[in-house]
Image 1 (cartoon, one colour):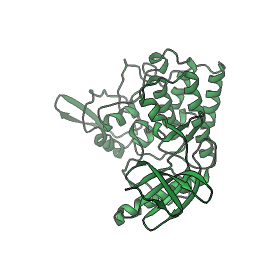
Image 2: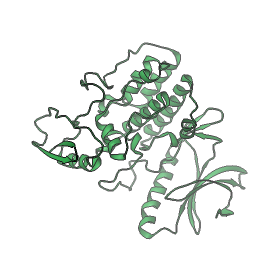
Image 3: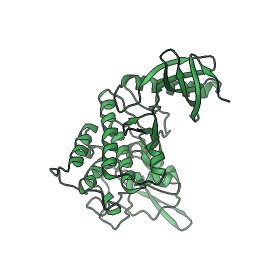
Image 4: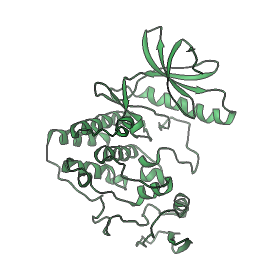
Length: 351
């Protein structure tokens, strides 16, 4: 049942709901404006409430640190008898997810503009020490006028935050996670650059670069699999977009764009047809990084410890994966392999 009001806000309609609570369209009578109000249900169990409330206020702190045309604005935070809430800018438009799911083909100029605006918002957030960590089409909103805004900072990381992800707990949306998120390593602003590269690839080709029958195979692909260049799937994609996507999707964070601002500049150059930067396909399938025929699978050098190897075992659950070829590794890697057999699939793990 939709409440008539929360605190001073008059509830107009429900916009969506999730594990933490509900998002409503509401009216602020004091300022006479329409807002979105995100609520946290305070009737959760004590354990759930403690975790969700910490994340809820972390999101508010993250949004409060960034005021930018390409980021949803936070107006207010409060608490009533039944709800903790934050009120935000209400945007007339659609999620990028809805646009992609509609089957309508985005024009190349529109794709570049969406990616550029999203990168502008991320650049500003990163410059203010906020890492989003969950960039995906459903968190990118597009107004009727074409303005792009990033929303949902629910798992954002800020230096002053006391909230920490539980050991072994994966936060984020699997298809858009960076390799360092999948392998449980520490992340910085470059994880958002990787995720935006995935979104850009999906806009260009109609499908994310990493797909699988289950979350484990998707995560395995993120760490070990290099997708085809977008232009081989969509001939309308300019050569420079192949370069931009490749650089954003580099497995090694040190080989990605050093900042979202750099990605913005390349997208601007692409939009104007500048060709000063020559494309490099180093991070795509069939290149010197992956010399075997497409698709290529290998034990990644990112798995440089026993803990990471065990995590790979958990992630894959030995399901729906081809036999993994042995790859030469540095001396520092754990020596030896243990062969696991399940049905007809043999999988070798690095210890």
